[in-house]
Amino acid sequence: MHHIEESFREIKGAIQAKDIFQNVTILSTLEILRSVKPLDVCCMTTNLLAFYVDRVFKDHQELNPQILRKISSIANSFLYMQKALQQCQEQRLCHCGQEATNATRIIHNNYNQLEVQSAALKSLGELDVFLAWVHKNHQGASTA
Image (cartoon, rainbow, N blue to C red):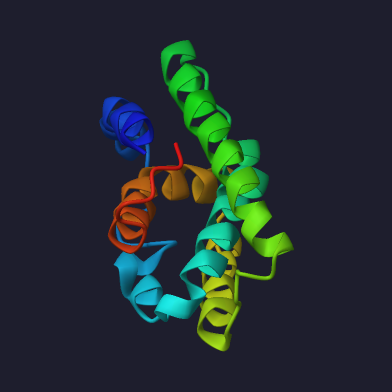
């Protein structure tokens, strides 16, 4: 997890400087994530990892090779975390309640309201919100 946070810190300023929609959020500054019950943390983490891997990292187009390397490194770490959580899902240890389902839907709706490139950039710039939530909810579990 430290590696992901460090990689993000190195590119955060450059990513957020390109964001022209300063008054819009995708992750809603943790309000959506705060509503997730402890039982749904695994599910929400899995959903957000999938959101970043399947949408954000694929939709974002980066021309700066240094930033692209950092984003690729973060994406690879997210893939590793996804595989680790997949084992929990296969053993049915990953409950998905209504709050997690609603939060995931809201995040995707927020993303869909922006043009794809802007949404991907915004979501990358908000990666620290997701990382802080993961850190708070997965203390003691080092998966990356």
